Length: 76
Image 1 (cartoon, rainbow, N blue to C red):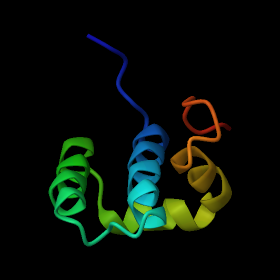
Image 2 (image 1 turned 60 degrees about the vertical axis):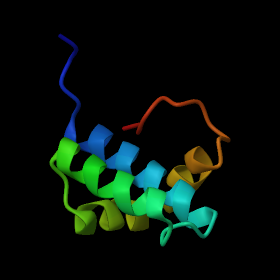
Image 3 (image 1 turned 90 degrees about the vertical axis):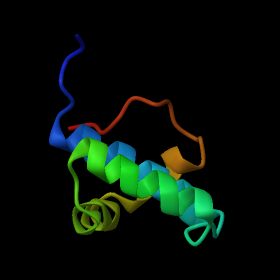
Image 4 (image 1 turned 180 degrees about the horizontal axis):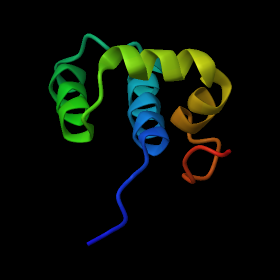
């Protein structure tokens, strides 16, 4: 069994996924409306926490959502 993800890693992953839909203007798409709630459930996160993470880490989240950075997760 793999190492459990930290809260920061969970937030980063959910934020990057949400931002990738947001940057394409697809937050109202059926795919987002099915996938995102499942991600929140599986990672035991609230949307408000993901939004806060996006606000606090917008540059790195957007860069990752655009595929401009290695998929290493958050730093620090």
